[in-house]
Length: 175
Image 1 (cartoon, helix red, strand yellow):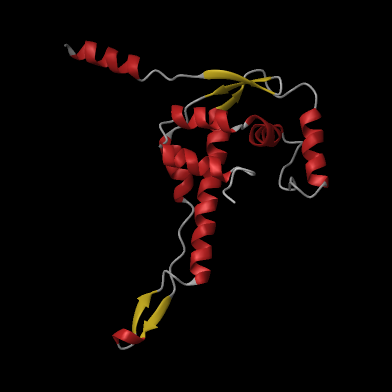
Image 2 (cartoon, helix red, strand yellow):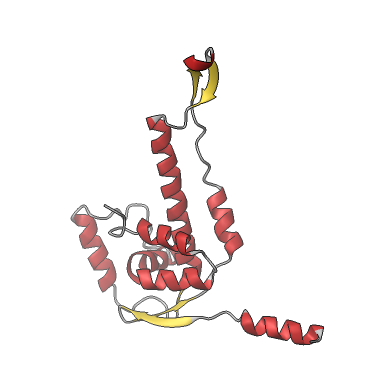
């Protein structure tokens, strides 16, 4: 097989598969997201440093205490923030609204009602900013579990990463 044939075969096997789905009457295209982008985003969330303690069994030698309750809670928080950042990146870059936002704001009325009920916090979103409004629609309406799974598969993310991302969505976390 010549180099030209090998390159052609590789191109055929690595063609990006983009599927179009419909959510709430809106066409959404699931696209691959760069693994390097996900890695870069998550690398900015650092693990906390474990606290030190004087080990009485070793003449008071200072050692890390990875079982410190505060440290364990901080680690859980870092993992949750990393998972959320991964999900947000997949949503932002992996979901494309084929025809843009819905013509009416019925979806926004529903989100605002959830906020009024104390079930959702939209305070950090500027709905006058078109990008933030679109991201809110993608995150809270179009970002269904099956769609996010399509994006993660297309992006070459492992099943373990998919499970972590799915668990990070409200209502999907293990109880």
